[in-house]
Image 1 (cartoon, rainbow, N blue to C red):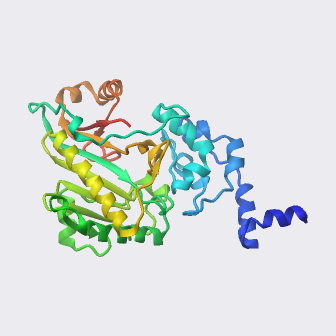
Image 2: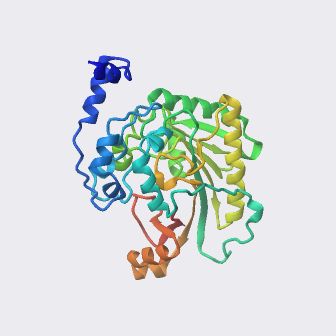
Image 3: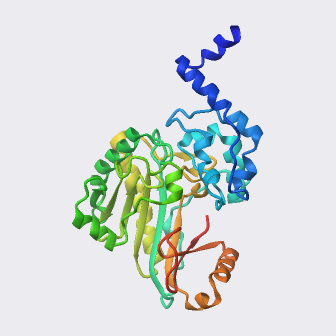
Length: 345
């Protein structure tokens, strides 16, 4: 009785208490992605210790975090965070995965430098580059991340951004287009511009990121269509700078200014900053994006590598710490000899 009273005192209701007990007793899952980082680092011992924990911000669990590694057999990492709490509450799992994936030590500290004046080079103007794109992810403190965010929190993020974006400086100013109730002409134009993100990605669905679709989601772009923000896709905010050609410096300058504009406008609106972890940098739903959260890419013609084969291209990119993808995105496949080449981390 004494133990029960002490244990029950941690919970608000009998129902909550027995829910927690059932979670703790849940069976160790069969992880189909046997070669994933999840399979390596989610041991039965860690599962027994952590599987009963529910995060405070969005009620996320370890079972939800590793759902993709359990459901699919093709995951390399296989884990997502449902909120900033996830990285802390499930640190016994996340820490070794993050350290192994990013190649950092246990005592590493995040550093970031967005000073574009330090960039001295640029893409060779004779290179067959169609376009350049640099993006980062950002998350507003106090709200869940996409795999765990509640419906109310998701709508709150959208409301915050749709108001904050009205304060952007002139060259970044534009319009926010919510997916809910979107006019067909607007939708078709966004499709034609290759701006619109879609539902149906199996990974995002299993990870919990497509709940309540399309509510609380939308796209912002400036008048020139060189500065975009995706709201509540894989991350709360995906801030994107892009343009035709290979002017990486120009794209990066705009991105740096855009990140500051979004952060300042959001803080003026609600007093909250972006989630910034001293150790791991800017917080994202996928631990592979931790740090700056930056992915810089070009669409470039590589007919010679097309003849050699995709496997040889991947091997060469690996040597350079780069990642080749099809121009339709991470899971959209490849057509022709134009590739999306980006940094790996």
